Image (cartoon, one colour):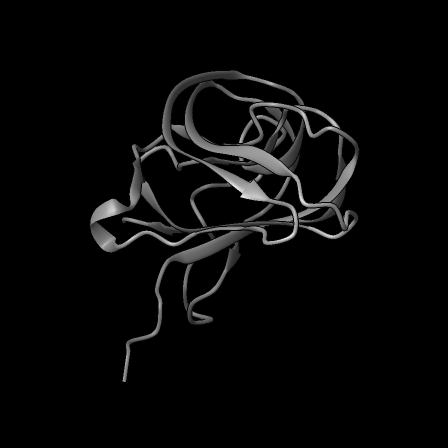
Length: 158
């Protein structure tokens, strides 16, 4: 039997209309707690047309302005609150103003009809230093408004 996950959290964006090139999920690691990305998912529920759209996981040197989201624990009830706290320039979703991207650490193209799922093997986990910011973003705008649902699961390495 596998052990229960510990210090694993999720940030979610549910059914949001997206029309621009934006950061859809942003996570700011706690001041002394690095993290690693365990899984990311992007899907849409408004188009029946086969269309491709780029997606990136990138480190950010300047935070985007986002809707605050407090990460939800996926592990035992005894897990502490995430060090990656919610905030408009911290952890959140659906950016209204972009920050500054530094390094693209993962990129792909996904099809509207299939969605996108990033599930790395342990040696491919994207590592984020303490007090650093990572974003899941669309580097280019969709051709028309699409309704996006997205999750990003991460583990804090305390």
